[in-house]
Image (tube, rainbow, N blue to C red; front, side, top):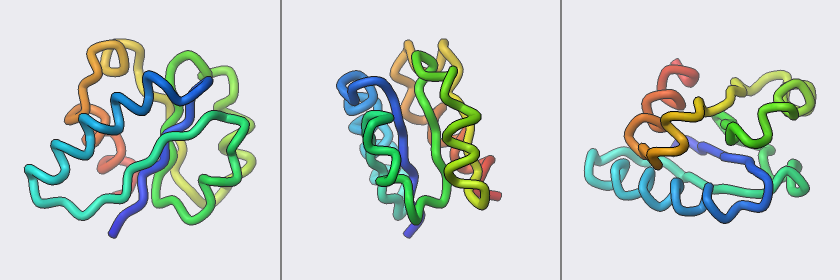
Length: 98
């Protein structure tokens, strides 16, 4: 099982995105543990295979990368996030996990 962790401001909109990602992963038969947290809960990223952050907290990208130097970390582009494109975010995560 691969662990995909998302971080944003408060976790509300990212939680909706996580639901869409889980639907896509289940439909495609992928074994992913996908969770979303606020940046205040950064320690929850421990053990992740990939960490993605929402565009509204892109300013924290360096902080997250510094906290997890051995984990791929990237931001989610504004368009993919705004469309709540669960499949698109999964593609981002899979590319980073390769």
